[in-house]
Amino acid sequence: MASSLHQISTTQDSLKFDRVAFVDVSKYFGRRRALAHVSLECGTGEILGFLGGNGAGKSTLLALAGTILDPSSGEIRYGGGLARELGPALRGNIGLLSHDFQLYPELTARENLEFFAALYGLDQIGDRSHEALRSAELLSRGDDFVGGFSRGMRQRVALERTLLHEPQLVLLDEPFSGLDEGSSSALVERLQVLKSEGRIVFLATHDFEVAELVLDRAMLLRAGRLLPLSRAGESLRAQYRDSMQRELTPRRPE
Image (cartoon, rainbow, N blue to C red; front, side, top):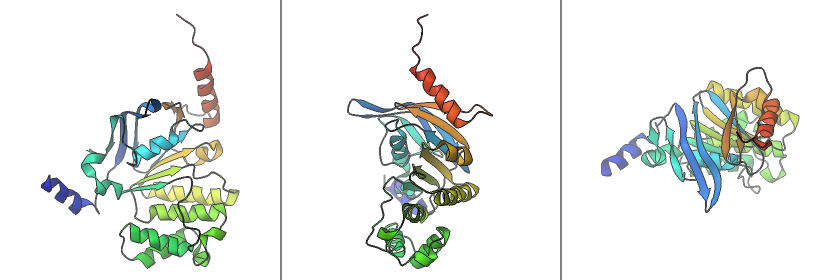
């Protein structure tokens, strides 16, 4: 055990993995099934999208990938290792952007970023916060209170907070929800940068138009079950509609 702990502590800052794989993963909350036998794989430089309505299992899947939840069965592999083997070294390489952005409205944008940088145990906090504001195109508003920002501006700050520690795996839960056209375009551009940097991105969304622009692959979640959407030359919206119709159509007895 001691040697294992030593290995984690010495590799925490350098742990990298080139893929994330779900292997027959299911998740139950009591008797309620949230995910059922999900298997998937995503590699570096790829944006994998999950489409589905409320309660489909998208947030649960992201929480499992982010080690916030443990699978009820099956396993999730990061490169060649499991979460329980990699411990803090793994969690230090995951960034999660959730619905509520998790920002403090009574702090400025700069203070929010500096607070989370300190929480992550990062060095050069001032430089990192400045660079994050530059990436968010909010340098001129860095000393303004976040409580007075538009949703799009808060989303940009929250995304850069998620990326402060340069995570290998980036998990985005409905990041386009409520954004205006300008903020959506800025997010699309930021996602392309993450892709070019070789990040692994899981993105949950119900916005088909945006999904067409940014996703390399898409999967449909319905009642916790995963269905691939991959027919070349056909829109994601059309594939989603066809998949839903097939699911709702009663099967004839043979």
